[in-house]
Length: 267
Length: 285
Image 1: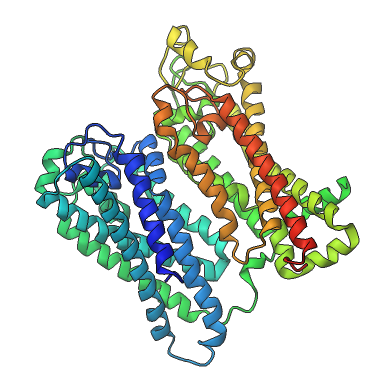
Image 2 (image 1 turned 90 degrees about the vertical axis):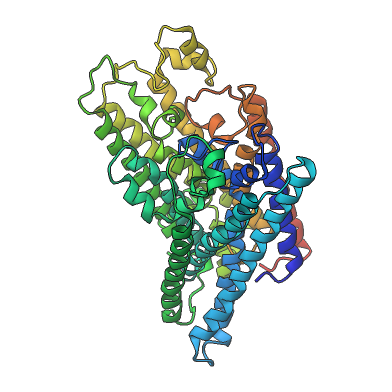
């Protein structure tokens, strides 16, 4: 968790403002509250995300605050381990308990961030664009907070574990490589029969809420690349996050004291 | 001083992070190259695209399947910092800095670090990019004239796009030379960003290296985020539209110049702050 909740709150609000002014304000085809929330997961106005190179670059820019947040939160878990490995884990043998306590703080921070930033965007949409929140819009907003909290929490975990193994700068590269690799891999399977199977197993396809089979979205978003089942996606993301946590827990609990400083960059 | 820079660069090349960056660049290039072979093998010469437009740095790829080019754009900010950007902070954190400064002198040590970061990053980027040009040029017919935008080379639309390139006259005269020169320019840009990180770490020697990567990552992506409104006027602020090869948007010379001036001013400012902080004893060497 961040040392100060106020800083996290400030980052969340700034992120919300950035997304509103950068990606919602200038889209003239947004006609409802639901569509404005769908902009946060890659839609461009009423057009759904189809994975073209320009759309992917736009999405990466949209996710800039979250990507920075991964490194800040991941570093805090890594820093906890650096201190904890010497002062706590050498005396307190229940590593799993320590690990669960630390990751629960990170999970709460991630959830708090998405809650505040999404509420900021909703507030701006209602206040400035005068759009009334409808039932579908509220469902989409809750889904956005839930799915993105899980997805970015898993990325924070991957960053933290890689940092413990390889230092913070290298782990940043690995995390970006993983995230970018999953995104650009869409085009590998374009027009191939394996495409649907790949989209089913790729966790990032669950983060495009404009692909969901919710009735309110189905009618409003055109040019949809793929249809994702909402209930299945929620379960999938929970299982995916649990698997990432278990793998990270196994790796961290196997790691002994950090004797050589990974931040020094030895050969 | 030249000798010191050469030794420093040699040392940087042996570091794990430099090797990792080189490997990732080569993997991206190899992936793009193999993809091109699969797509264009057996294509008739009259239908074939000009090979230099198929390399990793070509923005014309964005009109087609540009998986590796997008990944390169995504990773570029961190790849510029990773190989040589930590050359100062590594020595500072490990305590080697005091030994080197005694022998070479404080200021000289700093200038060597800045120069070696520039040269090292430049070389780490330039070598794979030249390999890419060589392999693509040898594999695909260099006399093919097609364009990924699918314009006829005699059409006015095509000419208007070409006129938007930096030094389009050179492109008309010798496209291969143009590609080589601008690949080296991009490598120099990477080198400047590497030096920027060294200067930043000199002013603020932070414990966690991820904080040194974040400023470059943030600045570079901010140019893409600010791009939206400008693109409507066919001018782009995004770093990749201005620094990579080809593309269909007007290059923004004023913006690039301002950006570079800002970076150089910041490097100077960071070195000044670093010196002042050392004089006042706020940074222990």
